[in-house]
Image (tube, rainbow, N blue to C red; front, side):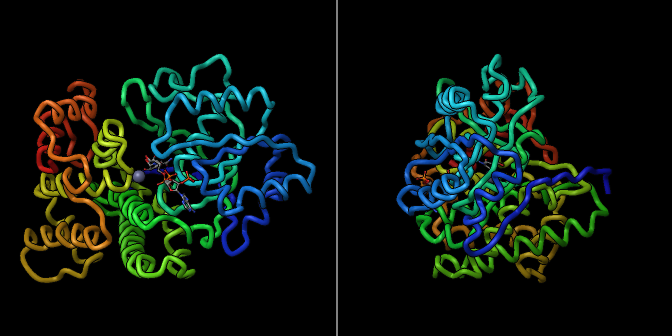
Length: 392
Ligand code: NZQ
Ligand code: ZN
């Protein structure tokens, strides 16, 4: 097991009616002027935003709204948020929504605390975040895990580059998680969220580092649990038990617990981000499109690891190591297909792409061949191109 530090400071307030504790959490974490970030309207339509604002009013906490965050949020919109939050004099950013809203809130927190810096300088790696302000979350979709993660992902609409930054300043102060708030998620988004939850553990599971048994068991249990309850949730999206299990797994899958003591890979995420950057596709769908192409390219590096995955997650116990490894890949894809997720560019809805576009994607993923991404199987430009061709 490698040395590790595990830091997850986010206070989790989980369960039915949890959002009724929002103002209390705001006060507890020092919020005196709250800048509320939300998305395209679902939080308004459901009445959630009104309920939260009523609570803040009752407690005499001034707030300002900032809506309009789109999926795959842009740096331009986050910049507008920084301006507005600074003008308002916010000392806490409250995200009411999913990963896109939360990541925008994180960007606004960093930007409004560093007015001399354009936020993209953080995302492009030119500067590191040295100070910020607390971010609170009222979560409405189980997917990205941003409510506890140390990541925030933005797209630069000018270049089409989508990327994330990891810093402990991205860890929210608190997360309000009421599974009932997720009952209204559209079916496709629900499926994409399920895939993303799985991918946050899958992108940590495949490793050459051995002797990390507990983390393996946690990861396998999480994956099995998500598959089990995903099936129930896809049948009845008002199944409280299923939606609760998915919601909690979504946080644990991306708070670092399923990779303790090992190096994280995240190659599939990087491949997928280029698809969202270029075509605006939904994050979870970009991942299911790329995972099979990635897995079939790399499984021969450690077939035993893939066979272990097949056996402990999918119950595949017959065949040679190679056969079991391949069966695990097939089972994963069959499951995603069964909940309506794409396995190829065509199914993703972007059509078959020409070679020039595939080269563009490989260039974007590897900074024009100047760097390799991931650890399990380092992905250079040629390998990225091969994987995009396989998914095409
Ligand atoms: O904008 P509204 O109207 O709220 O609608 C959203 C949006 O259209 C809708 N939605 C959310 N909750 C709903 C709901 N509709 C009805 N009822 C509800 N309760 O769902 C759509 C998708 O929302 P979004 O926030 O984009 O989804 P998700 O949570 O999957 O976040 C995706 C973003 O997070 C990034 C992704 O790349 C993508 O940009 N990620 C962030 C990570 C992080 N910060 O740690 C890690 C992930 O790997 C991921 O990269
Ligand atoms: Zn993800």
